[in-house]
Structure formats: C-alpha cells, structure tokens
Length: 235
Image (cartoon, rainbow, N blue to C red; front, side):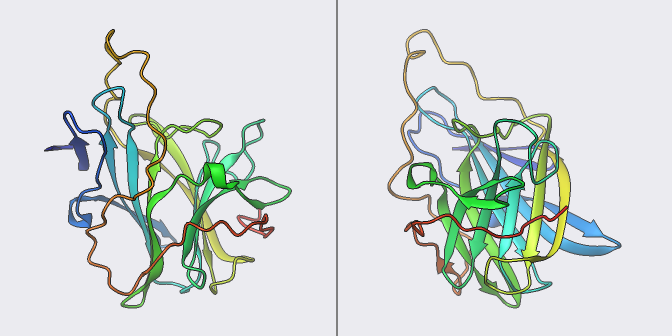
C-alpha cells in the first residue's frame, strides 16, 4: 500500500490488491461546513482509487455533528437540491442512532425519502452513534454505482446534508449543502488483457474501521422492509 498526499487529500493507491481498506481516520482529510460562523457538520473523508479493473474505487466517509444529537443525513446531489430534476434520483445516506443503521435512500420531492431495496444496500463499514457528545456516522461507498450519480475523483461534487433533532427520521432541524473537489485523477483505464473483467459485487464483509470508536453501534445490514417516508431537506 502506498499513501500519497495531494491538495490536503489522503490518496491511497493499492497495487495488486483485490479489496480496499479505509485508512485510519487520522489520515482522512477534513471539511468543516459552517453557517453564520457556526460549524454544522464536519465531513472527514478519504478516496481509495482502484489500480486495476478488478477493483472498485471507494469513498471512506465520516460525518460528525455535535448540535442536536439526532439522525444524520448526507446526500449526493449534483444540483445541491433534494430533487435532482432528472429521471435519476439523488442518493441519500442516512444514519439512525436508535436502529443502529446507516443505509441508502432515494431523495426526491415525493416521497422525500425512500429506502432503497436490499440489492442497492451496498454501503460498507457502517456505524452510527454518539462519541463524547458528538453524533458520528461512518460509511464506505463505491464511487460509481449503477443508477446513481457518480462521485468523481476530480472536479466538483455536490453534497447536501440534514441534522435530526432526535433519533427518529422525521423533520430535520437543519439542512445545508456544499461542493467538494477531491482533487485527484480518475482510476487508470483497464488494460487490453483485463478490459472485459467485471468488478466484483459488494463484499459480504466490510472494511475494518480504525477510528477507535467504542460507543458506536455497528449498523445492521437488515433492510427495514418498507419505504420510509419523511420530510428531509424541505425547500
């Protein structure tokens, strides 16, 4: 494993590996999102690029907020809005502390939040819980997933977020948006020998987290079985 730095971003290039592992949180880059001089969320992240066609690039993410102590939501939204305005919907990652779940949801105007089916629950290394008065959500997500907006290694990526006042997914206390450029080159192209290789499906096991969290409940992979309708990112 070789660790590089570029534009204050931790870049991991894994040579010859068949699976990626997130680095220590101490090696993550950090973006603090402020509103009126107050930090609303802290987004810590690292990108792990695939070095061959049989690997998949991933985003290692950690969202922190000490404002309300409720659920946390982070959305991938190129237009920085709840509804994408296109046929393809935005993707939300929502952590529910009481359930101990961090799962993927569709974001739109109606319904506002819709739990994705089990076949799309591809997040890895998930956890949600309170650490020393701060609510912390961790996840690992593939950059490119079928039917979802891609998270690009270079160029601006749009994100939206929401903070719940309690652990129940319902009306949020605060919402916002931000752009983030990871400032790195895309994954190398496949060679002629392996150009037809198909990336492996989501692994049954999850990358090991080295964040040192002892009080976080590890998220269950059990899908709730029904769509959750709620108001999130009300515009």
